[in-house]
Length: 133
Image (cartoon, rainbow, N blue to C red):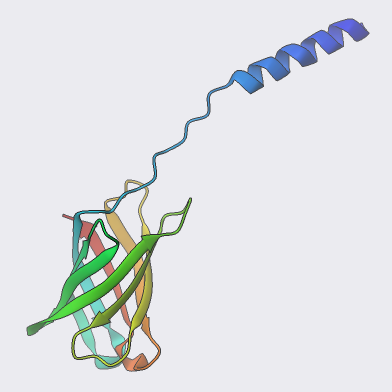
């Protein structure tokens, strides 16, 4: 009985140690463009066209349009083993820098719950959603 138990445990260990685990490839946003809408509640701006370009060298460019197009320049990265995209950027004519983040959906074609916080000018804090073009 004891030998049968040990045999069963050995077989179970062999099966579980040989089980192939699926790992998903990390998301690569390099060379992609995302279009969406941004809101700046402190300045009563709603649903303004918003574009983000994720460059392979880690730089971020884009624009926010409010009658005129205001350039976005900065950097980006992905939080390891996460769906969080981190953004560090400036927005033309706005004082201070932004620190932001957004969450990629499971199919990696939409960014949701995007925020950009500006410590120098809190009234210019923004939120956004964007879809991969």
